Image (tube, rainbow, N blue to C red; front, side, top):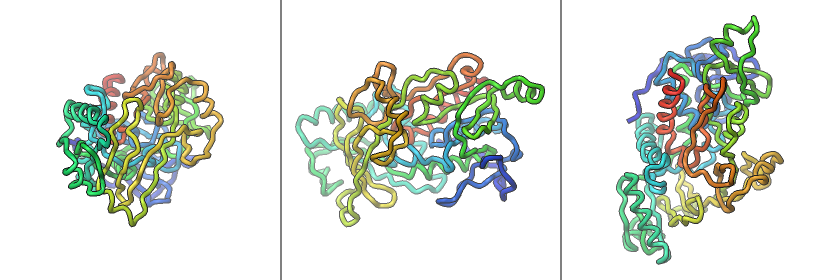
Length: 419
């Protein structure tokens, strides 16, 4: 169950001013509008926090929410480099609530996905967020795929996925009249949701509990506060200085980084290990014509090929009623390269100089070019490293797992920093 939500009523009021350079607090604007300034229970001039979370995607916002609900007396801020929240990986995914069938038993991915799916469904019910538990078929179309399908079914059962059953051709047609296959796994617990809407709801919870979101804050430096008469008091209480590309800064005691595509670079900025490195791959989708959407009722996936670390091209219904087909996986020449010809020289050079397997989606690699399959969380050493927790690799199903991940991060922060 989701922990009881804690609110400070009336925490968000009319705009009274702002941080120099366009800092804003969390809220929930209408589409296309900037985030309004909300008091969040603290003076608008405050630039020091007990804990700062870097990254305003779904994992960062869920983690900030978990921390402030657990530690309401702490001052907590979220730093986001864009003017809006949750617009990159959170806002560019298929929207599937994964069941946890695919992942290695006892892995963090498996445990957090199964737990996270239950939490996401419960949270959406509590908040009135629309979702559809439309189910999924994983379909074998060749005889040689059937042993892999059966092994996947057993893996799902080991992971505790609810309601799984193996079905034959007749039952496939009953569930998906226009789908043909020899055998399939019926996974009724799979669903769909708009994850950006979920992430913005996390931000609203966080703000109403007294938290701050500072947008347009692209982190450039993370360093120890320099001793001087004017800042010695803050420097002792808030020893870490985080500076953005405009020269503005905040101070804090502890840092949690949830920087997604930039997790390796943020770690390096803090003096911690740059490995694992993030390699960006772009996934493209096709959209069925509206008059053809009747052909697909739920998610339809192929049997995954163990030679490749992705699930294959699949049909996915969307909350708006459209049907997506995809994704492929092609090397992106820019970390936020959503268009085919987006290019960044630095991003592509970071990839070219590393050895890695071909034909994979966005994924973290270790220094030998091996895929990092599971979630990775680490810290560092020294005066800064001892005060930082990095979320280094949170690939799919991170959105599904976000509430479960946030609970684990809150536990780790509490233990590591003695909150």
